[in-house]
Length: 171
Image 1 (cartoon, rainbow, N blue to C red):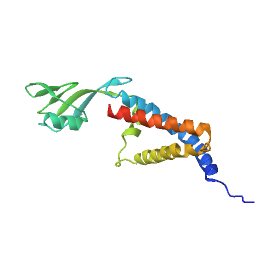
Image 2 (cartoon, rainbow, N blue to C red):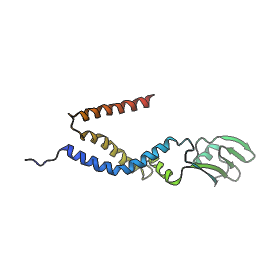
Image 3 (cartoon, rainbow, N blue to C red):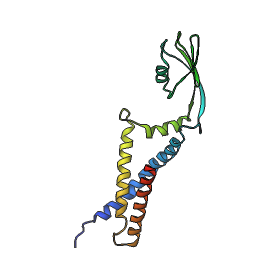
């Protein structure tokens, strides 16, 4: 009698323990993903007054880059002072005063997961997580025998999820 284990047996075991391991990561990604949906709002953000010395005589676009602010537009200029939304810049001294709105420290760190690029070591977690989720999705098809009613019903839900995603993407 053969003692060889089936692919289904191994898929179920890997799926189970990978699922337990990923539960913590998925929780953080889920919370930070929902927070990123509201990134253009002021949800949970606090205002901070900041002063920063920049090089003198910068253009409004250069000021935005230096302060890491998006969509900085000149509102008015009075003498050496340039006024932009949430701040001012002195063209002669380079002194910038501005208000930034940031998430609390822990939430800011959590949202960095989604924004990580190949320039940061954190991106390896994103790659691992993405590959793990792909395995997780594929290995779920080995949880039930293909001839069972549950498996067939699962396929309908899978196709429903694909169709809903495509509709949402293209509408």
